[in-house]
Image 1 (cartoon, protein in one colour):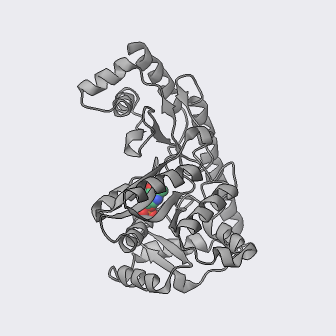
Image 2 (cartoon, rainbow, N blue to C red):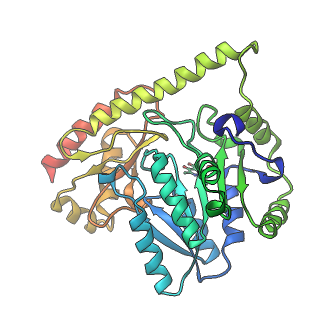
Image 3 (tube, rainbow, N blue to C red):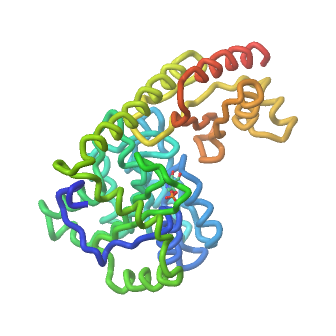
Length: 350
Ligand SMILES: Cc1ncc(COP(=O)(O)O)c(C=O)c1O
């Protein structure tokens, strides 16, 4: 973390967990008191958040991300969501930010992160920064919330001293990509020691995450250093993996820049989240099958091409827009053209 941000971290503020999912579960368990607790969640979101809140009986307070604004976080929209919720007596306690985004593929600018931190300070919200895709960044620089917060604290220590930030990382993504081994950690910054003690107690119930998961975390945070025997090979292989993903992302983006789709330039994570225009006749056919239009489209695509994408309704999407999430993890790009010819046939049919 010192190497990443230029700011050191204390071991006692770092909690190992069986993947980020288990970390989020711990944090939300501690933060949510009852059905009146609200947590600000970006929409579209990775559904871990709404699912965990449902289990806990707490409330999701959605704030919408706009593809026209590059899926960045509009602090005005967050403010509206917060005020709407508090007007209904919901006790809003935290804001979740997923950066780089799943399913959006967006990477937040430093300015955007500063705005979020400042708003969290104003409303005394805990920031849960889901940064599991921090190594999957293509066109922009990744700024961790911790680094931006520390820089704000350095310029105005008094104003920013009471911010509580939890930042999550995982071995599931990036270059390691070992989601089956379940390894990750979260770092707490500025937490009230009494709350941190509760988190420690809660996480201790599970004794410890799997040893292999912990080994992988150790490898992830301690990569070979210059002068080490394996350094050159590690750098070469890492760059090749990232370059490969970047190229496939570019190719897929080319597909979704054609007529019928709208898609932002991929900046990070492993996904593209294009919107697709679905004609009314297809929407009617979907309704007859009891499906949403985007689900119908994705199933037809799967049946026709074998390409499996996830309907936008699984992540949440703006009213009236239809999206799907696709990933550029699969090898090769020849399958991308199958999507284009399917789309043409689908539009002809409907
Ligand atoms: C944004 C985000 N957060 C958390 C997770 C869960 O990560 P883990 O496998 O470490 O539990 C995922 C997995 O896809 C994700 O996309």
